[in-house]
Image (tube, rainbow, N blue to C red; front, top):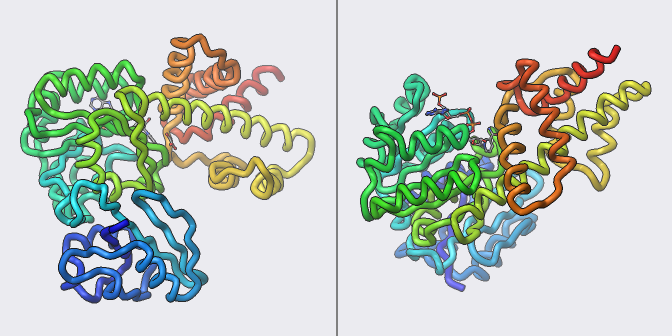
Length: 397
Ligand SMILES: NC(=O)C1=CN([C@@H]2O[C@H](COP(=O)(O)OP(=O)(O)OC[C@H]3O[C@@H](n4cnc5c(N)ncnc54)[C@H](OP(=O)(O)O)[C@@H]3O)[C@@H](O)[C@H]2O)C=CC1
Ligand SMILES: O=CC(=O)O
């Protein structure tokens, strides 16, 4: 397979071998510092083409290289141990262009600069993309404007001035409002443009937005993400896309800047459904983890030790290791707002209802998140759901 290879590194010492724009994209993905890895033998000066096997052989000659994941199509990730790690991205020749720099669409719009939207847009800007932004609360645009983004006063004006516009909004209501409302993005759409909605919504909402966008002749892709604040900052999101395949292909280099992997799932609604199923599981896991932490404490165990025990066994999950230590200290710094987790459970239960699938565990978890919301915890991290259990205990005593 012929591939165009991108070596992610802090420094590109041979700028004539990799375009300046490409080097910026690579830098975003860099996870090594102060280490130089030559790219010269891999990338040919003319068009960056090389064979994958040649690249792998070359990479193996650098220290102790371990392929961690080798996607047949698009992403290869290698770990250089012990000092540093580097990602090697391989853009398959099946992608729309053999030259990665030509694959970046012209002007990019971004609507919705909350916990997720801000770092996602920031990564696009840092990668050298020409980005225009809009957010309901205008001051959240300021840090991005200072990084080089242009500001437009409405979603319509962003869409009108951009080739591909992304949206990352709170919920179905805001996603519809921003896409289809007065001065919404659809009013600025026309043939040749694309709208990529990364908000977590239900399939019916996504289809409604798709219909409105496509009625203008533009293309639509739903692209909710798995991964929270830190993965958004690190460009490590997982995109769950569905809709127009040609827009998926056009947007792929942008998704690769913001994420570590992408799935194309077919018709609009499938990306939304996948995201809701994942978050339904996540919400139940967190509720169950909360019960375990409190139970362990009640029977005289140290909940920190429980977190450690879990981390070493078959039920280990990054979520428990990341959130557990702060939950033990009753701290819930917001990465994924609790109100969004409850929204996702509510939407997942609706999805289950639509196909008569029993989901008693998720239904019980949803009730707990509702209690947490009524305790004023909506804007805390979703791990604050444990406080709802504490509140229930207090009620009983
Ligand atoms: N945080 C996370 O870990 C993850 C979140 N998600 C999903 O991504 C989406 C965004 O999440 P996140 O960034 O955390 O959420 P935030 O609450 O931080 O941001 C929500 C964004 O939506 C905007 N918004 C809300 N209501 C309206 C409205 N009526 N009209 C216009 N804009 C509106 C907000 O604008 P304003 O600034 O004016 O309030 C803000 O830009 C959600 O669907 C969430 O479920 C997905 C994966 C992970
Ligand atoms: O939707 C939240 C996430 O972490 O994914």
